[in-house]
Image (tube, rainbow, N blue to C red; front, side):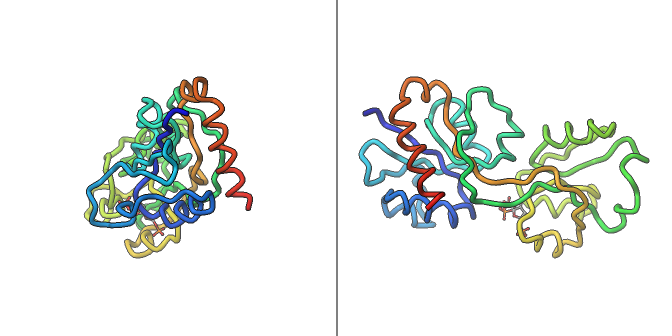
Length: 215
Ligand code: PRP
């Protein structure tokens, strides 16, 4: 049996993902739960099943390049990168949130169509450019990797595209959600070549994930 590496994202998705892995009887070494650890690679109770923990945006990249055979990534990330090397094989029904446009209160009275061009702070450059292009609007993106909501607050733009879960971050920063681009859940993704050459092992893990989400 060849080794399978599962790439999981850092951050709040862990609250949903860890119980799912527990349901599958996967026990991860203790360091995984130590917030001060610098470790990125973790063993499990299965000799041939290891876990790497990376930034959510990098999960798809690690799987696309075959560094991990399987991974957990939101459809926002799959949409942004459009990797051909990946199958999105299963909706894990966790990590529910949405990718939305939000604007300052002053900005919502002005329609984008009137402008033909807007400046948007976001992590999701490709998704944003394509989304507005479909409406005939040229979006120029200020690419940020976090704290997107600060950009309008500090006056560098009036529109953002970012993840919304409870909506509290928008509220706290006086922003109004104006449009949902994508409804998001986490997906189990698989490297296409690994799926071919390790089909029975990977299928076995996919089935276990599927059983756990339907339990
Ligand atoms: C995400 C997202 C928003 C926030 C939305 O950030 O980028 O800032 O959560 O959640 P809410 O609607 O429940 O307030 P996260 O905290 O994951 O960190 P980040 O800013 O580093 O991306």
